[in-house]
Amino acid sequence: MEHIGTFGASRFTAGDLQLFRGERDPAVAAALASCAVVRMARGRRIAGGGQARLYIVLSGLLELASDVHTGDDGGTSRILPGESAGEQAVLDDAVNLAAITALEDSELLVIEPDLVWELIDRSNVLARNLLRLLSFRVRAANALLRRRQKLGEFYRQLSLNDALTGLYNRAWLNEMLPKLVARAAQDGNPLSLVMIDLDHFKRFNDTHGHIAGDAALSAAASVIRGALRPSDFAVRYGGEEMMAVLPDTSAQLATMVAERLCQRLREAVVFPDMRLPLPHMTGSFGVASLAPGDDERALVAAADAALYRAKEAGRDRVCV
Image (cartoon, rainbow, N blue to C red):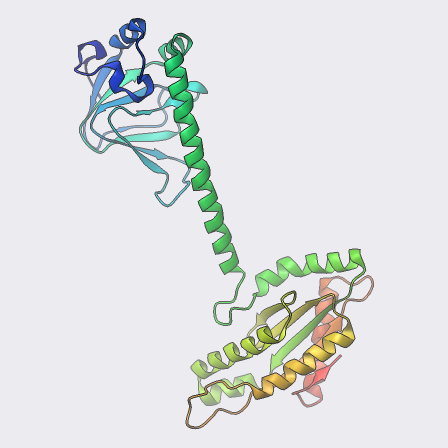
């Protein structure tokens, strides 16, 4: 930065500055008159590692880029003539965490931290304007943080859903099933699983192609999702295996749910507009309920064993 004079020799007055708007104390104007005015060429940068100072833009345009990204703008903001940067660094006596870059040739008023504190002690107007400015920036930062949290939750939900079927995925199951098991055990309520495997799915893929296979998986997922209660959870366990997690459901009721799913899967249509309809899908179903002392691994293992028995017994059926 190039030193080009002092504020007293400039064409600006204290009233042109946001922080000093409404200030009529001549002693404040006199204190500002001795502050340096520097020229910052376009593209030049004040690194964040320097001494904490208050910078007020007299002309030009600055960009303030924080090292903490809080929004879609990448953590940047524009500083217009009359506005300031570096207040927080001065107030908490810390190195400025933000990098300041000139987007245009700019003139800056530089106020050293000791003088900032002297002016705050002397000027109620400055203190009030500073509080208003910081309040506005806190509100803006909180709004950006809320947006970021919502966006993070959106992407988190995406990461817990299977892209093809829209069902919950294995990551969701690994996170939520232990919690559901712990809650059921604590409350003494039943919890059941229905493990589902589409019969001869590899043969289906080999015969009709992977596009038809994906359509069959989506159709099966719709059947499962549509047959469950809002309190139940449909999961794509992996490949052609799916699962229904049924809280507050006994083994008897879970078996009835599985029988209903088995019947609806037989009736599912993969491509309703095909001249030659594809063969009906069928599935094998294994049902298990949480036993005293079991954890989530034991519950899944019991459902998997029941599924194996259904496949061994000829498929297209439910076993407990």
